[in-house]
Length: 576
Image (tube, rainbow, N blue to C red; front, side, top):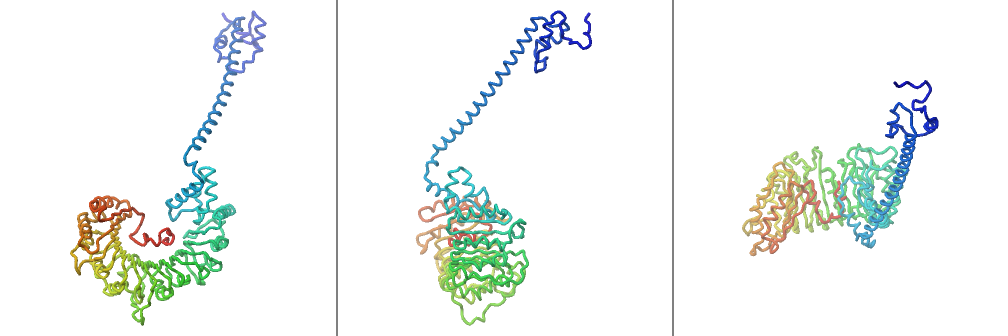
């Protein structure tokens, strides 16, 4: 029978070997003794330790210590190996990059690549130049060398678009702005300032009028293009006090969400180089007419406002435009009835000759002409003017009456030198109105047509026998635009057999003037299959006798003015 050791004594204390007791009592295991199998077994034994057991304990302790030391050494060796692995990996990557062909390109070739990327990069009106996702900033995030190249390439920093609410104009924001302008190195600048049309901004931002002044004043000598969107007259009134000797293009869009009070006129007589202007008004004629441009300098004017301002411009400003070549007017009345259209201006003693005008674009698509009942609004834009050198006419209708006004057709017949007609009709029966317009303009060589209804009847009436009744006998180029927004749209918006007969008739040898080019544009993805179908149907006619072009475009309406070569590379002029 085993007896319990006396109180205060070690239960593992030997009663036969005092030296073993001292050895056991002095061991510092630094661990749970039960983790060692030999000790765990001895701990469960009721008898004291013997000499061979003490030896086994010592050997186990030594082995454990050696294992711990070896483990630590291996951990250090692994750490060194891991660091060497990362070093070698970085070295390999660096050498692979050095062997990459693009790293052998000279800086001037890199600059050409970066410029092409910058110009072709898709942009939207809400884009902000300081975005890290857009060039040139995103290019500089690739590597130090690329960043050095773009920072020294002024062409990438000549366009600055600032959107209110996306950047704080505190000390940091102004420092970024200063760096941007410094990289432009005094080259011609294109400045675009888009304000929030709800007039919300950071509380730390300076007033808009002060900010525009501070922004434009130091760069006034190099500023060539300026866009101000959602501004008030007070916001940019300070610009009339600055010297803008290089300003060649100006786009202003007034904020229609604010209530305007009495304002002083804002004149741009301080811009002697100004040639191109686009102006979107407040739809209050009294406010819009206070923005005064140097009319006798302008070669291009694009206006978007109410009919009353259009009337004011035509009767007051157009006669002053002695160099005007391109005029585009878009009218919108916001549903309020305007009575000026009832006045035919027949009281004018003689017609006012506008000899320099070559392109005239009129967008009536947002006017509610049905409200004018017995009036004939279309001729009012032409009368009492004479356009002896007009080459291109662009018309966009929301709805066109089946019975076109005879006075409107008379005005069209006066355009003796007109060769290019672009016409779009969004709604209504198009067959009879287009037939009347085509008959009034027999000299047309280029026809651009945009319909949301079926093209087939119109194409069929352009396919007919030669003679006096033959429509558009001088037609050389035809362009058709397809848009899938019509709920009745389908891929058969133009019957392929009708199109084939039209092309066959217009390209036959006995026709005096043969069709040379036909182009098709699809405005959205729903219309894309149409391009494939017409391309296949017209394959037999190419390339011997006809050039067929197809293109997909991002256009929300059927306005041909958006594709006008005169505005190519100047999208801000149409950002109204």
